Image 1: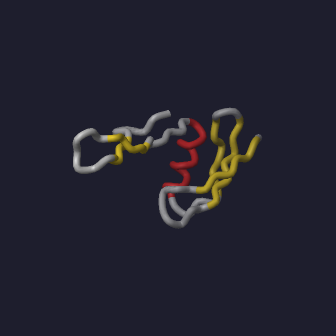
Image 2 (image 1 turned 90 degrees about the horizontal axis):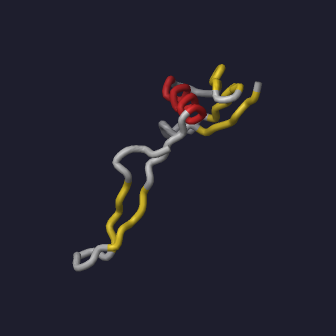
Image 3 (image 1 turned 135 degrees about the vertical axis):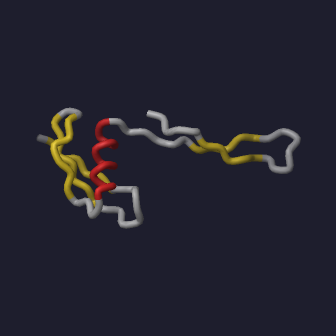
Amino acid sequence: MEEKYLTCINCPMGCSLVVKTEGSTVFGVSGNHCKFGDIYARKEITDPTRMVTSTVMVEGGNLRLVPVKTETAVP
């Protein structure tokens, strides 16, 4: 069994999580102070996704650059 260490990003507490895995199967999560830490850790191990943010140049607008982000999380 392997242990992976994560820091939860769901709330300001930033719990240090220990995830026990074998392959892509999660057997347990510890260190979380709420249920969201457990949910975050399991998803991060089995199906990690991220929102992508960037800026786009605008031609002929009031601003030279505008912020953009993906509508949904991407693998």
